[in-house]
Length: 461
Ligand code: SF4
Ligand code: SF4
Image (tube, rainbow, N blue to C red; front, side, top):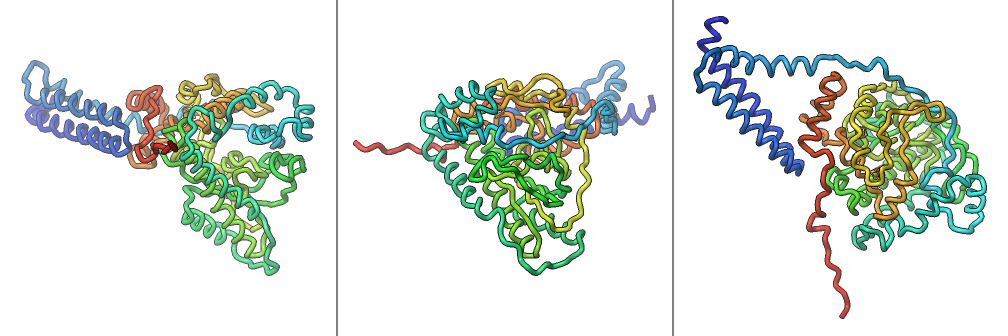
């Protein structure tokens, strides 16, 4: 052991102790700001533990102290280096391309609109008798945003309804006449403009892909065009994400989750409609795909536009916020430069191990198993029947899975460092899972509604 180290070991110990303590103080401050009191108090617990360990060690004198000091000084450095080395361990994971088109009529949002004994109702269940029994179950329940549901609140459900109402007003503007004068610009300049402007309008991330066959629904499942074959001959699709507010999302399945879903469907809808109109002004076709009026499967478009992967919940998992986003899409003939989808196998690997969403799901709708071959594609599929039944009981779109996902933490340096490590190193992936459970709880508790949301109705005498 060099005499220089033995003489100055206490200085090194205090230095390393201060670095680690500062790190945990930083974690405590960020957690407190994020309203995660449990995480903040656990981080403060570590601060105290580190003061005891490093402070005590620098004061005490005992045999072989220099070796123990060395371990306390070098150990954290070696661990950090090892955990951030690019050792991905992802060779076994394969991604498949989806095959064939989806009929929008079979998705739950279309089935829930079928009115009993109507022609559409009869025709649908004649073709799909396998759905009748389970669909009759949700029809016995109060329903989404309905009085009698567990989380019914006229003020908060009314706010959600107001946002959905406004989205509905945008349906008439998803398409429109195209300017007869065609303006020509370089595709790369147009693509750059689209990305900068859409972010300026409030999007989190934007990507461009060629529109593929499997992106497009085979038949319309909602509205006046119900049952018609979808005709969409656009070459490109612009996909973008908007952030779901963390505070509202983590209150799901209480009313704020559906307030926030509706608000972000509206925000995505406004951006998509504006973008579509701008493209038509330049003389090219464009169609916005917004809530209740889609002709494409948005998560598949967004994945191919390089915005993320499809995870265990079957939703788009973005690198910065996981599933805590909503998606908007505009398809168009405007010449653009496409993005190369960056396949992030670390997300699939993390989902394979994590399963937090499956453990918290109140209706056990999320599989705890590995990906399965579904119609030729290796993926997870949630049980949308049981999920939707739960929505119809509570009256909201729940979102518990989205809220607890370790990827869904805010976009800041602390969480981005963990997300970088998850992508880069298989050991950090395991450590991140453990840390998430430790700091935020394996099954996090849903907090109470903030006071400003708790209105007392005045009843007439
Ligand atoms: S909670 Fe875990 S398993 Fe579920 S989507 Fe998020 S990372 Fe994947
Ligand atoms: S939204 Fe709720 S019920 Fe549906 S899968 Fe997610 S956690 Fe389960």
